[in-house]
Image (cartoon, rainbow, N blue to C red):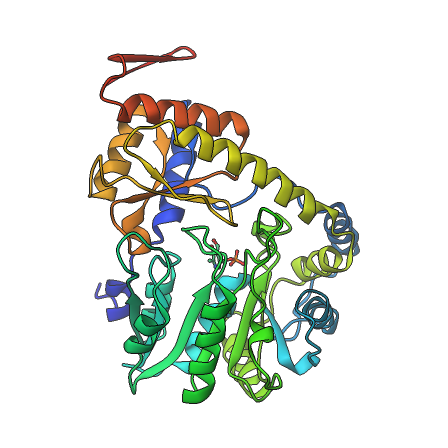
Length: 402
Ligand SMILES: Cc1ncc(COP(=O)(O)O)c(C=O)c1O
């Protein structure tokens, strides 16, 4: 059978593949330490679970409007007022099956074949393929050596007549870096001047540590929501530990949201009605689980960073947010895919190669799992990477050999 050009051009998500591999190894009884994950281990908020159960018991789980139920859209409007200080109308928002679909639908609404979408390196693993799926050309912008954020000039130099959007993510997966307000402001100005979209992926915006906060993109413009090309992408997956519910959203100018909703109406229809009810309950309910998650993650971040600093040769960047620690491992192997494969094979620790994020010579280590997994995982890594460590490592009933 002959497949389409798109099918040939798109690779499966590296991170989802690694998750599947870790699950397979665990099922086979292997003592895998999964430092490659992308979801908190905490539970969904009680209110979300209760609302979902109540609805399920009615047996009426029906289609919803393509852009989401009125209640879902109103909850997104209220969220935008509460966490961004920006009043928007129901027509400015739409719900999707995760932020992933919201980003994809935005790209489909903006990009024609050959159009370009510019984003910083390192980038979230899906961005290049999402741009390709929309028929566009991804334009990743490399930062100066040793840095994890391109300069404003580098971003500006990457823009051409074909650029349709700049795509930003802060705090960033994989680097954990929180983009400065100065940088975001410059990107907003560039987009407004050129009439191109600024897609702001804020999926981790409430998971910022050390009392800091992610810059609010709306503070960087004087224009009203319908006059500015800013599109905020967000969702319940990370902040409320509701990854499997698949609810995300977009907030933007009404005409774009209308176009995105039309596309979504033919693609998947409205997001799952049960999940929307649960998401509304999470957004409108007590917010203490988010504060708790942030505090738990900060402790895990501190633990991981201090343990990783004990590995000679590894350059550890302290993440300001998210649940990822992005380390420069080029002293061990500049080929991160080979290094990650070696680590799984030798000590059964799952990490994600930096190459998947456009930055080779790095590994992404997640600290969203248990503290025990972090400790055990980094212990094994340290043993493997330290040339002076003994030839064998005994971990429980398992002995690893170099
Ligand atoms: C930067 C970034 N954006 C978007 C997403 C997608 O989130 P969702 O689960 O809402 O589709 C992820 C998930 O890993 C992410 O890391």
